[in-house]
Image (cartoon, rainbow, N blue to C red; front, side, top):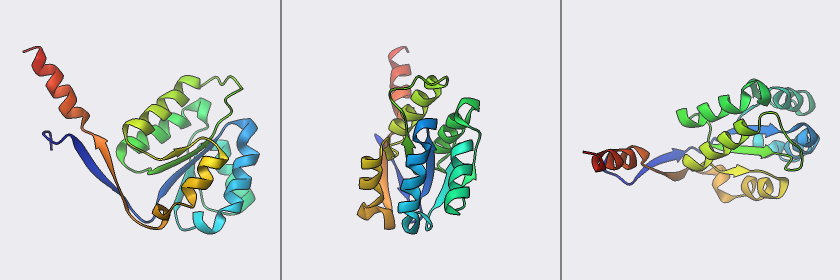
Length: 158
């Protein structure tokens, strides 16, 4: 495996989806979840603290709640991506409002990119992803083998 350029991971038919929203976007995310409830009920849902609780209250869908974003929830979601237990992220963020946890948000988005995780930052992108033919089938994603990259960098110093 250390010699492969990419490592293949399979996203199963039943996705593990993280739902996140900044305060000014929570209402929009809840509306989106309600609109897509029939699709989402077939998947495992999780989210950051307040967002997850609001979605549960407003839609009745089960959503596992992590901490709120400013209290480490974004980092918890990122760690679940690294562990392989989150396949998909819907994150309605407010690009015009400063957030106290902006570095955590940036780290989460970087982890999504590193691990080739589909991520939607707005309703239009979320609509495209949720209606994709991949939503009800397996999907194989390719992640750059960073162990190989690091190993080759270390060899340069030998």
